[in-house]
Length: 378
Image 1 (cartoon, rainbow, N blue to C red):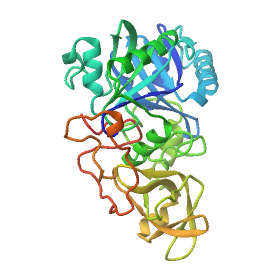
Image 2: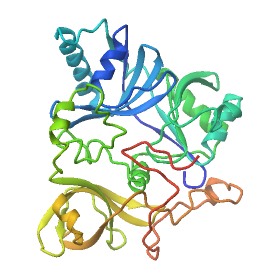
Image 3: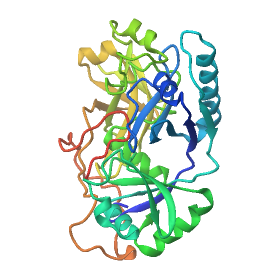
């Protein structure tokens, strides 16, 4: 993927929410604005206490129909949550809802992520219309129904790697044929998976639901921005957010560069220390190596008082403490994602590896970043 592009299968949970009351229902369920028809929106299900219950991608198929995509392990939780909230809203005389139909379609659709520098060209040529896949025609967060190699599928221009890419959602029975068609059309497409995705998202500063954001974390301490919290509307968790808005959270989620020796990275639940006082002031929630930034990276929660003091931090990994510094924004790649030279065959293109001599990377001004799914390259 670093030199050309790649394919990744991901078993997302998926639901259809439709009916005359679908818009009112979804508007109460999520804290941000609903997407327009043909658009997607990253969103969250908050608990009444404003904890993060789930992270979802909403695609609006029509005026009153939504395609909701969630994490694999969230399938039954989100399925139950959707049903419970529909029943709760419907029985509340102050929030009357018309019919809302909710279907679990997890088994009906599969997902292939196609990402990397050549993903637009490959998909455009397969579709027989490269112009339709241009940045102007197929914008970030767009949703379209497309046909690739004769296979109809839903295409969402979203990316958890922060790089150019699409999610393709064909019918489950067409998943393998679509994969084989992609590989046949462009044999240089590599397979990639969660480990590579983790490296990319750590570099970009994308928090992962299930580790960096869970039902143990309040939306404000997790750092959800105003983009995701539209306080002018009514939604589950709003009262708790208003109650906590005037008080600084006791802890905050931070993006960290960690100065560990080569081959040693955080994985989560490592203690974070205030180097000045020696006090344990937090813990990591995830970590790993950024192969393009060529450095160790982590997310964690740290006491707000320590962050405000400016005291130095250290993280204990395997019994030793290593300096850690809060990163504002994504890490700048020190290795290129794609070469400007003509693409070679896979056997002639070496894998991206650690470079022990690489210097720590600074913030990249060319990428924007928030909580997940922001694309860095056009």
